Image (cartoon, rainbow, N blue to C red; front, side, top):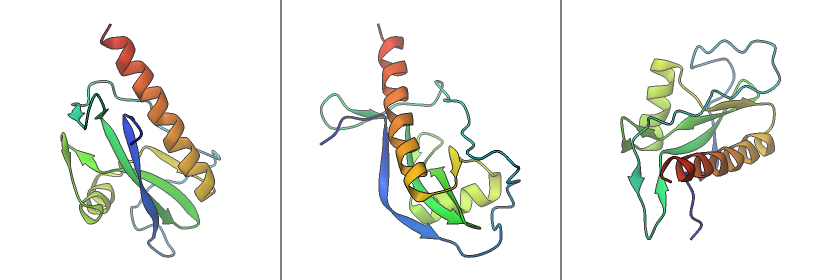
Length: 120
């Protein structure tokens, strides 16, 4: 099993046309918020841990990475989608599925490096 601070759950959730989350899409190609180092750590097997896990959701021909750890607890995909609709929180918006998944993996690596450096 891969040790990561962020695990991308397989699958794309196509929520259809429109903008059901009510997010402002803007003109930037890809949007990613900064990493929040104050999130609680959820211990995994061995020395692994998570502070973010996401699902990728297709909305209005864009691919959104949304968190599935909310308030320090792992939630279902449906709960994560409902929370994103309610709050507008996401960890990235991308033009393609490939870009979204690649960004999720890269973000995971960055979080792991940052968290590792903080613990030294």
